[in-house]
Image 1 (cartoon, rainbow over the protein chains, first blue to last red):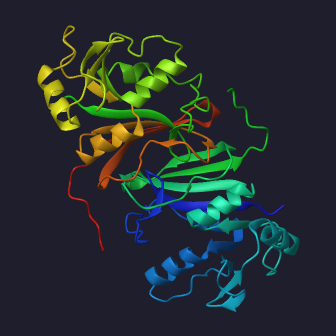
Image 2: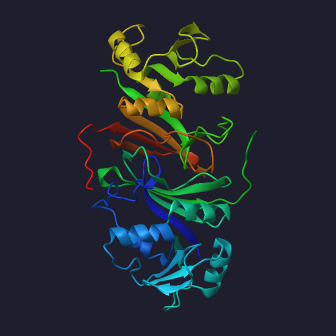
Image 3: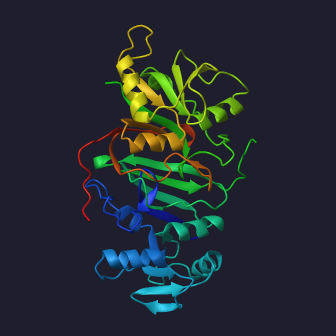
Length: 189
Length: 189
């Protein structure tokens, strides 16, 4: 089964961006590489607001890249291909069901590669509500922003995870990998 | 100078407690000990709501312990000693100035020990606003709660930190230590 990996960089107080969408506080440590992560995925999905931010930051360059099939979830934009992306307006559950049926992006043998949930927080919440997030891959930079756009806005049920990896990189970025544990949540009270 | 250490356990989405104050999701790994941390501090300060939660959870036992001088910050309760705590209603800056002048809790030679900011989020925000947090000592458990009381509610200026320690403990708890870096924040935009 193709896994859905929520993968993002955040501040120590959990923000993926400043209130205006700026991500200047994030950085890529010299000793860190996204390569191993990219090798495990072939498809990306992001929310429409995140696409807007990517387009704004990227100076108009394509938000897709590396041969990745890129989907944009939007409740307002019409579905279809443009800007190198495929707009969809299904529920996360329906979208993922369709994507999993498709098995990979159709290019070669990559039939079991993961699907990268690139954000933002609102789409992450929709996916978490539907319990569709299988893994978390989070880079935490050592800054408290004090305000911004949260990766995990409130409003979804408890989801338990198991820590798979915790690595420290230069300039104090830590990379955390978790996998979803779907056994029943043990709440004492 | 006596350091102020904001030290707390949180969920992966940054909550110190569930909406009702319950902290059942937090746990103490077998291979983890608060001992080394306790050895560096001799004074604790918490917000009044945190005291109420501690008293509720603890079944009426004293919120202070280990010979630690315990202060409770409240804007509504009258100042003075009761329940083994000293209630204060000064600003964080005035309180810390006074505490630092006092040098330790007066018991023996512990003149340079740290001050433990035990929470909650509202008091943490007041301290961060006043730039009084020198260190962070955060335990992160591998669960997304989806709702709760945040450690870092929004509403304070950016504060940069440097990672000092990142350790993994059993059951996937990670313990992170940061120290405040007070050089001017580098914001590109």
